[in-house]
Length: 101
Image (cartoon, rainbow, N blue to C red; front, side, top):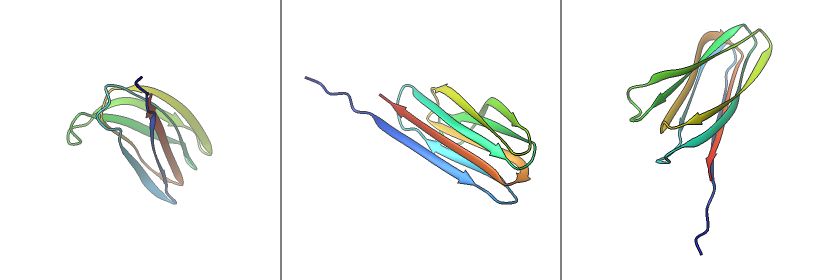
């Protein structure tokens, strides 16, 4: 009998009066389900990037939130490296969690 193992990964970044960036290495899985939340004290745009090598990133999604808002998201991800960032200065939150089952 072969047992399936489930591995979870997560990161959380909070800033006060600054830009924010969160990076996650999901490992060598063929696909990872990711979900998370972004939020800010100011109107902000969060960009989601993926990379196969951790060097060259491609933008895959853009999330906009209003001042004082949070937005949840879900990604069916095939990239090993995931980066979410905002260039907007504020009290920012980025939280990403994922797993492979």
